[in-house]
Length: 484
Image 1 (cartoon, rainbow, N blue to C red):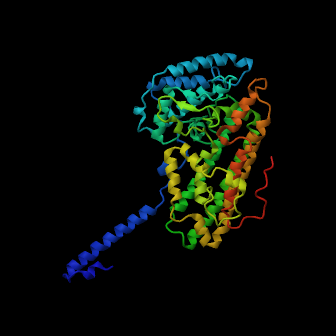
Image 2 (cartoon, one colour):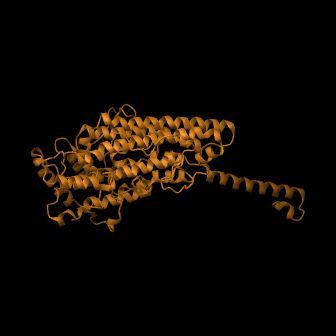
Image 3 (cartoon, one colour):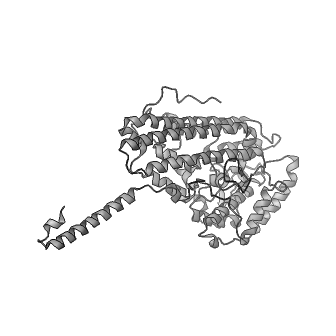
C-alpha cells in the first residue's frame, strides 16, 4: 500500500522526506527477514571450521581443586593400576579386583565438589564430563557380578553422590546426557602423538578402558570418520549460504557439491569397514563393549545418589548414532527415519515398522547441546536440497548418488554390527570358565535393546529409510540380508 498517497498533500520537501523514511523502513524489514532466513554456519555451534566436532587442542586437566577426580581417573586407566571388569575371573585379575574394591571405596568417600567455578569455561566443563563419565563406568563395571540369588540381579546400582551430583551439574551446563557418550569416548578422548603437528588421524592417541590396542583402533576409526565428516559440514554450510538457488551457476554448484558429498560418504564407508583389520570382534565384544554399557532397562537400574528423579535421566551409553556429522547429513538429504513421508517408496516393511522410530532423535540427547542446536537449525532450512532436486530434474541424479552412497554406508554398518555383536552373542566367553558367563552374555546381549537380532532391525530400518529418499531407486533387492 502506498501510504504516502493517503496523506494530505504536503509540501514537496516533506513528501520526499516521507518517501525516503518509508523506503528505509521497508528496506530494514526486508534485511531483517533475509537475516532470519540465513542459515548460521556450523562454526556458530562449536563445530570448528578446521577440526569439526573436535576441540582444536586436547582437553587440559581440571584446576587443582578437582585433583581427586583426575588422580582417580589416571589410576583406574593406567597400565600398572588399571581396573578390570568385575566379570573377569581370571587368576591374574585377582589383585586388580582387590585394588578396584579399595578404589571404589575411596571414590564413594569423596566429598561432593562444587562445579560452579567451571561455569562459563566450556573446555573445563567438557573435561569434567569426560572424567566423571569415565569414572562412573569404571566404578559400575569393575563391581563384582551379582550373586546367584534372583533378587540380587535386580538390585539397583548406586552411583555415589561424589560422582553423580557433579556429573549431573556439568551435564546440565553442557545440555548433554549425564553418562558416557560418543563425545567422551571419541571427540574429547584424545591427545596429540606429536604436539607440534596439527590434528589428524595419524596424530591422535586415545585412553582406553581395556588397555587393548583393539579398543584404541575402534576409537581411531570413529575419529577418522568424524574428521572426514568435516568436509560434509562444509558442503552443507556452502549450500545454506547460497544467495539463491535458482540460477544456472548455483544449480551447477549444487550438483558438483552433491557429487563431492557422495565421495566423502564413500570414504567414510571404507573407514568403517577398515576397522575389521584392526579390531578383533571377539576382543571387542567381551573385553571392550562391556565397559560402554549404560543403564540397562531390562536389568539392574542405575540410581544417581543425591540427584532428584535420577530414573528419568538418559543413561544408555555411547553409540555411533550420536555422531553429529552423520545426523547433519541425514537432515541435509531429508532422510525420513520416522516414516512420516507416505509418498516415498517402497513402503516400510513390517520389520521397519517395529523398529524404534525415535531412535535418531533420542540419540541427539547424548550430544553436546550446541550440536543439537545446529541440527535443529538444519531441520528448519527454508530450501531443503531434496525439494530443490524435486523441482530441478538435473539435480536428481546427483542427489540420488549421494543418498545411494549413504544407503551403502548403512549396509556396511549392518555387516559390521552383525560381525561384532550379533555373531559374537553365540561365541565362547573370554572368561569361559566363569560360572555366570551365561548371565553375562544375556546382560550384554540385551543392553540398550541393540543385542541379538534387534540391532539389525534398528540398522535395517535406518538403511531402508535412506533408500526411500531416492527419486529413482536402483533395481536391487535392498532388503536382502547382508553378507558377512
